[in-house]
Structure formats: structure tokens, C-alpha cells
Image (cartoon, rainbow, N blue to C red):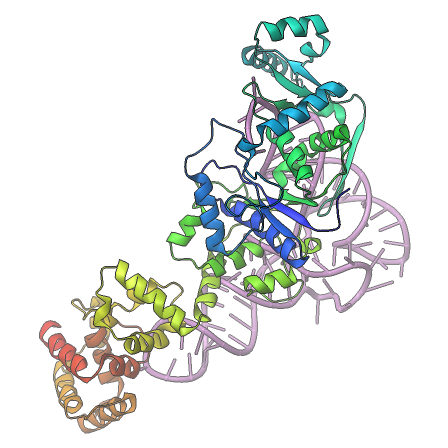
Length: 484
RNA sequence: GGCGCUAUCGUCUAGUGGCCUAGGACGUCGCCCUCUCAAGGCGAAAACACGGGUUCGACUCCCGUUAGCGCUACCA
């Protein structure tokens, strides 16, 4: 009997890196658990020795933690239902296969991969459904014994009952049914003694008391096999929820080739975990109103499987960028400061040259203008290093023959100021323009070019006051020498 | 091919038979603000796949067609 407690699991296979689709599946499981006061479990499905990738488990765990999806039971943290790595549970699967064999709902198959291959090709040629032909189902006890003692390798297959309709209910899709004729006699135990996904998954979900199986839609078609297994064991079915797939822009299943799919690719590009999590949550789920910006804890409060929709969702990076901007913008200044310092350090800029107060002023000035931390150096490099080049397009547009003289005059005015603030610079510039009988803009634009090398950025007087009097004057003098 | 799932603006989506002249967001475009760039404000273009039913009334329910996707391994 499955208890009332909600227990869900994320069960990745350690074949590489955490896929964004995997992140979304993990997130929905996590949110459902948190929302219902249940447990979120991590289980490693490493039953395919051929595809196992060294270090993938650690990577998976690290990435999940980075995203903030802490699990209650699983590798490293342990729990009462372990081990949580399938390769450490081989004896358990073997025992359960024996039960199935005993009940005669499974049978040994000694067919070679070569024969199976030929059979399948033949079926395909005849436009038949590829399906095991049950040759080994009719083996006598003696033949089986003989094969066994001859040490012939074998697999164990599920004996799918004839002419029944397999029905189950999916929380997201409603009632689904399959004709058993359509279901192949699935291999449960491979010849190397490892279980297949289907067997291990069902056994573990039952033994680990999993209440809800929340996974990608690609599993919907194999769910009848699982249902049959639960029935064969006499176990109660968990609730199923098959999530819509994440898609490439061309609407095929999200894959490499068409962009980045690894969570760490996005992390390395500077996306915040808050933005990625928020974005991925909105792919297939919505709160039912107009809100778009969510923190993880808000999602925990709001999430429900009933609001998950059925159709696949295109992974559209433009919206992710916008969300990154939103989340970065609302981060506390101190946190941004730390991130900025780290970014400067890895960019080879000597962080010790800048006081925290200086960097905080830069952050205030650039807040509305950056979507990523790297934009601080990308969009306003002049806060960290004096310009060495001046944008030719801006020179053409803003720099007049008289600009150099005007700026020299302005530099003189600035120099005379005593510990000036933003409004002092502003007043000095207005005064100079008036004396020169020119527009403020005739000074403002060349000055911006001189101090920044570019034509865009925060308010000019913010820039100048952040840079300070000495640095501003120095940059003016350098610019009038260099800009022709 | 078979089976299954799905189908609202370019994209993410709201919509559970009358509140729909189909709403919001991203993106795009225009205007305002303005020393530039952003941000912000205002506005525009932009969708119910198609055909049948059911109903007084369908985006909403049913059937079919079409299309897309998934599965069809001793992979998960």
C-alpha cells in the first residue's frame, strides 16, 4: 500500500551532462514534492554499462545543487531506501526476476543478438511490427536446463499477455490505453546480469515507495510495460504524470546540434540559476495568471501538476535573456558586487584597483543596462580601463572641429572644482556652454566620447562623477590629442 | 509503416459552452521621456490547423482529416 506521503524521484542516467530537459523534469519533481510536503529523491539509473560516463554522477549532483534543487534522499546524502544507485542494487533485481520466472510471467530467452537482428530486419521488410517472435517461450524445461548448464547467455523477457487492453490514467493526459498486442516481450534482465530500465524502474519505484512518477513524455509509450510489471508483482500503481517535451526551434525534440542543451553551458555563459529555473518552469507550466517572474520558493508555493500543459514547448532563448535581466536587476547590490568582482578577476582585471564603493556606483549606474554580469565589462569597459580607441561612428556624428577646444576649456573648469559631485560637474558644464554660447549637447556628446570611447551609457554626469575629477580631466586631455 | 501523444499570435501561454471585438509576456515596429544607450510609459502588427457534427450558442464537447512530435533496442 502506497502511503499518503508524496515521494517523487528524479532518475537520470549518468551518460553525460544534465540536459535542460532533465533540469525541467527534476524541477517539476522537486516543486511537486515541496509543494505537497513530500520527499524529493535522486536515483541514479546506471544500468547501461556501455553508455556510462566517468564523473557524470558527480556532475549531475553538482549541477542540481547549483540550480538549488536539493534532494532529500539519494547518493551522498543517503536515506532509508538506499542504495540509490542502481548498479548497487543488482541482487535486488535478480531476486525480483526470479519471482517473475517462478510465476511464469517472464521467461528466459537464449536468442543471440544476431538472430534478433535478422528477425527484426525480416519483419521490417514485411512491414510487420518489430517484435520478439517468442521462439524461446516454447522451450521445454529440459531445453532450458541444457542451455543453462551449457552456460549459454540469456536474457529474461516479460511475457506480455495476449488480447488485453492495458489502461492507466495520467495526471496530465487523462486516460490512456494500449492493446497488449502492440507491446513487445520486453527484456527485463540483460545477459550481463544488469536490469533494463523498465524492470529497475518499476522495482525501485515500488521499493522506494514512490507515489508519483513524473517524467518526460518519451516514456508514455513504455508505460504499459511498467503497468504490466506492477500487475505481475501484485503491486499498487503509482500515479503517472508525463511531462510535455522541450523542443528545438524547429519543433523537434530538444537536442545538441541546434544549440546548447547542457545546463552547465548556460551557467558558463553567465545565466543565473534563478533565471534558468524560472524560465524552465514556465515551459509547460504557468500559474494561471499574468505573472512571469518567480523565485524558486514562489514556484514551490504555486506549483501544481494540474496546471502543467500537454503540448511540447520550444526552448526560446530570447525570453531566457529577458528573465536573466529581470533577476539580475533585482539582486541585492552586495551580491552583484561579489559577482562583479569575480567576473573582473577571471577577466584578468586587477580587482584591488577598485574600491567597493566605486564598484557599487558602477553597478547603480549600469543596473538597467545589463542582462549579464559580463555586460559590465562588455558594455562599460571604460569604468575599468581608460579608452584607447574611440568609436569612429560616434566621432563622425558627435565630434566637430571645435570640440577639442571646447573640451580643453571644460577640462579647465573641471580642474578648478573642489571635490566635485555629480551636480557640480553638471553646473560647470552648463556654465561653460553658456560662456561658449553653445548647446549643452555640444559639450556632452564629445565629453562622453572622450571619457568612454563610445556613444552610449549611463547619464554622462553619473559617468564623470564615478570616474572622478582627475581621471576625467586626464581622459579629456588624452582624447583631444588622439581624436582627429 | 504501426502505436501513442499533441494542435490559440514568430515563441511561451490565458481561455474548462455565452464574460472573446480571443487576454498577458518575450521578440519586432512606432511614439513619448531624454545628453546617448537602456529602463519606463503609451500604442501597433501578430493566433483559435482544416472539415464535419452536438448545441439557441463553440477557441472551448464529439468525430474525422492534416500536421508535428514521441516510442517502436540486451539505451535510458
